Length: 342
Ligand SMILES: *[C@@H]1O[C@H](CO)[C@@H](O)[C@H](O)[C@H]1NC(C)=O
Ligand SMILES: *[C@@H]1O[C@H](CO)[C@@H](O)[C@H](O)[C@H]1NC(C)=O
Ligand SMILES: *[C@@H]1O[C@H](CO)[C@@H](O)[C@H](O)[C@H]1NC(C)=O
Ligand SMILES: *[C@@H]1O[C@H](CO)[C@@H](O)[C@H](O)[C@H]1NC(C)=O
Image (cartoon, rainbow, N blue to C red; front, side):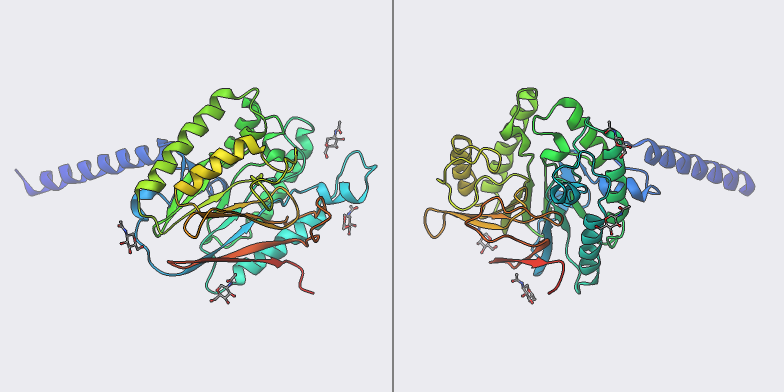
């Protein structure tokens, strides 16, 4: 064969290969378009895991790190709390300022947080009440979250204002279309993180199948946690199981009913889980379920980035803030920091 024909055929083959690879990348639904940073940042939770923190590649302990745990930016609530007669809130400037300040603080940390997790209630107006307003709140929230340093992964999960107090297939779809999976697991340096959708424990009248699926999935995750020697296993969710004590009286709106939480907490302890982080209360709590020195679990409820409530008046009110969680091979330490320094 002539040399020029060989070169010609080689060029054709290379051309076809590049086209096929390009088409595969373009049409592969698992990989959001790389140019669309907007969506990519918010939709890394899919196939019940988190893109970049999949199990197979993250099973080696490396070195100490810390992450940020926050909750309830809830754009639109502050104005409502300040003006109880207000029918339509239109101003969420205060919440925007608080989140923006927090993000600036996270970006300036050195080293940077390994990730930021926001445990639900992203905006105040739930789906299907006033979709126009919800859209405005979500657009502003996304614009503000965009200021987060691109090297810090953002972990999101749904709360009652994201899915409604009584979730439906439609409210779930609105959330997942915008933010990806509602529950999933991810791994960093041999630490397993489990993200839960607690809304099903409040109400699943219209979502029996989804509720059962999550329960089955949780059992699989707990089997995994039990049979692998992970450095730590940590849970993130919106509604806390309890505030201070496992056997405290049920508090309807605030926590999960004791007949549901009691057996699950025992399963969690059996799976070596020691830390659960939640939001929802807009007030800080540190609870514990202690059986013995090996079998114990801390239930950490973190106040809001946005509006503060003082729902439990025997406990101190909180100020807008977030938690810094330090992780070493043997230890986890956390503290709540205020956004506005005094
Ligand atoms: C929105 O609220 C902020 C903070 O309370 C206030 O400074 C601002 O003037 C308000 N904006 C409008 C358009 O009312
Ligand atoms: C819904 O929200 C939009 C935008 O904030 C507002 O202009 C409109 O009046 C609201 N509609 C109702 C019925 O409250
Ligand atoms: C589990 O991991 C620890 C270190 O993280 C190690 O000391 C221990 O031997 C491991 N146990 C098993 C059963 O592999
Ligand atoms: C986390 O570690 C840093 C650096 O060692 C330390 O300054 C900070 O106080 C620790 N925070 C907590 C909550 O333990």
